[in-house]
Structures are given as C-alpha cells and as structure tokens.
Image (tube, rainbow over all chains, first blue to last red; front, side):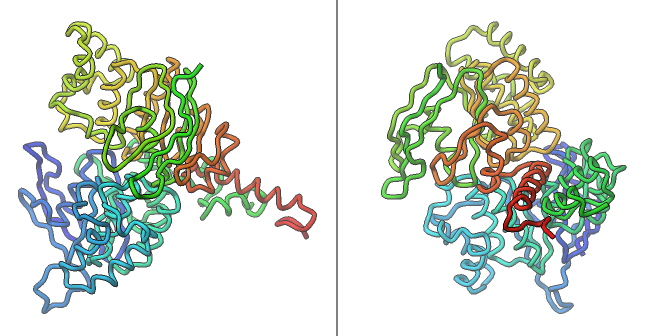
Length: 259
Length: 254
C-alpha cells in the first residue's frame, strides 16, 4: 500500500496539498487524472521521494518487500518532459543507467526494455537528437529497464503515436508492478488502467475502478479537465448501456449484432 | 497564390539516413494544412525547415528549395522553451520590441490579441506560474502579436488537458475565422482533422498521402495517427460493408 497521511506541500508558498490523506493499492495500474495544475505530478514526486512533504508522511510498501527487508522499495519516475531525464551520450547508456545502479544484469534489462517498446533501432543514437516522441519512448525505457517496484509515469502517452501507445499499454499490463500514471489521456486509462484517481485542486475528487469513475454518467468528466473516453461517449450517443470493447465491436453492434 | 512552397526538400543527418526526403508541397493563404505523421516521421524537422528556423548546424544538411512569400510564426513542441522573460506581458512583447515597435503600439496590439483568444487574464502572470496549456497559449500569443502570414504549430495539443485543449482549439477557430494560414504538425488528429482543409501524411520523412481530411481517414489509421473513436467505428463499418458486398464472401454472408 502507498499511504499519504496529512500531507501538506507547497511550491514557494503556493499550496498544492493541504492535509492530503490517500491510500493507493499496490500491484495495480493506477491513473492520476485531473486538470493541469491539480497536483498529479507533485503526487508522483512525493511518492518517488523527489520532493519531501512540508508536513505529514508518505509511506510506500509493496508486496515485494519482506519483513526483514530494510530497503525501501525502488521507485522509478519518467518525467513529463523527457528532456528533463535524458543525459547520456547514447540511448543504450541512457537505458542502462537505472539497471546498472540497481545491480541488475544490464544488457538483459536494456535489451528487453528496448524490445518491448520497439526502439532497438535507436540504440546508438544520441537521445538529444531524437524526435519528441522517440525521446518519450527512451525516457520510458530508461525507467522500465530498472524494473522498480513502483513505476511512476508522467504523461507517458504525450507525443506517442497509436502503435507506440498500444505497445506501452500492453507492456504495462503484463508487468507485475505498481504502476502510477499521471495522464490526461482518458482513452489510455480506459483501455489499460485498473484504478482511477481524480484530483482536483489538491484534493481527491474520486477514486475507484476505472469503469465506475470514467463510465459514471453523473460525473462531469469535462469539468474536471478530462475527456470522456471514446467508447463511453460513443455508447452514450448510440444509447448502448455498456461501452464497446473496441471500434470493431461497436461496428458490429451497429450492424445489428447487439440489440 | 501560396504563402509557402517547398520543392524537393530533404533534411539529412550527416553520415546518416535522410530524415526528410524529397518533399514538395505548398500552403495557400487562408488554408489550414494538417501535417500528420507517426512519432519520428520528420514532422518537426519539416516544419522547422519550411519555417527557416532549422538554422545552419554541423550535424544536419538541408537541400531543396523553400520559397516563403511572407513571415512565419512558429509554436515549438515544448512551448516553454520559447518563453524568455519572467512576466507574460513582457514575454509576449519581446518579438514586437525586436522589430522596433513603439511601446504604446505594442501594448495596444498585445491587449487586442489577448482579448481575441480570451487570454487577458494571463497577461499579468509570471511565466513560471502557468499551466502547460496556459504556457502554450502565451507562447502562441507571443507569435500571434507579430501577425505572421503563416503560423506553424508543432503538436500544440499533446500535453494539454481537455480544458486547455479546448482553449487552444478555440484559438485555432478564432484564427480560422480571421483567415489565418496554418500548418499544424500532429500525430493525434482529434480536434484538428475536422478543422483542416487538407492533410499531408508524412511517413519516414516522405509524404505518402495528401488530400481532403475525409478521404484520408483510412490512410491515417494505417499510419498510426490517432483518430476519434467514432471515426474508427465508421472505418470498421465501411470495411465490413465492403467485405459483405464481395461475391467471394464476407462477414454477413450466410
């Protein structure tokens, strides 16, 4: 469980959180959503230990820990702006940094991360010369390669085309880790996340299963700076009770496959 | 009549593969062209090359012809990089100060544009206290006040939440109403496809398809461009209908 108790945090006197209490289950893909400025990134940084609360406590406990273990769980964070995290001369060096620091077999972890995101061809390139979408993938690979207990991804789908976005979602779903995704991409959340946490002005507006939160007709998703996921919007417009699993299924329903 | 025309344009990394290869296109006044392409297809390089801001550098060579019949304003993919001053008002004024406009005229122009795009409330803020969407709008304002003949927007919607996304799309609508000429690079066509007059599809540095947005939906999907869910459903239905009408069998054949 990741637990925040009475957390207060401010940037230069501007409060972000004032007495935030929050429990996040581990082992899930959890989506942090909310308008720009609602505190998503700060929450990721607090959990990753990149910033300390002004008061209150942040506790990260994962199933991977044993009672005897004194080490804190490893938390990796891919920043919102990939340029903020890229520093090595080559993509291979960049992606090798985290597993090397954790004492993991470097080549194996690097190759796997590059392969999963299908960016093997970039391996000898200089990260700074890549396109923004490619930088995003390298930034993601450099966190995934370290296989941390908690993976924090800040706007991971921003700048990614559809195939890359799908590959990322499938890879995350196959990982047995706690994955925290701060995002505006409600379609990605709908397809790949299990738990939704909607933040608004430093408070938790809603928390629950993704289908229950983003599929709730009574929740004014758009007033929270979010977009109703495509399948949910489509089902409402066509008077279907449940959203279709895919565009193919939706087309079948329209063709008479579902009453 | 064109605002910009590129002919046989290539961008190559020294000793490497071509990043943009033999691209030719033009943009007419008042037209909005969507430059769609998957990640790494060369959208940003092409946009920068035609805008004249690629600049001489040791690692890239640009060949071919680019004709510009007017001024170009450019919104960077990470708009924060183009904000140079602490205050929003001062930052937006920067471009006009550089062309020697009088302070009173700058102030008038700046207020007028801020009002047009509904951003007056941002003028007295500090640039460090802006959200991502507000940053994009402020950077865009810094370009708009110079009243360029062509506006190039590089993935203007990518980091934005729905509210800010709508804010930027409203600005695009306002510019369309004013007959602005726009070249917008994006891998996510939602919100832009229906606004564009024409789409250029860029894959591996080459234009592989171009035409009216409605005619290119299938090509865009195949290229990995993000489309609205309802458009994907429409494409699936068209595919089903097509296979059902074939004599050799289809989904609906008994």
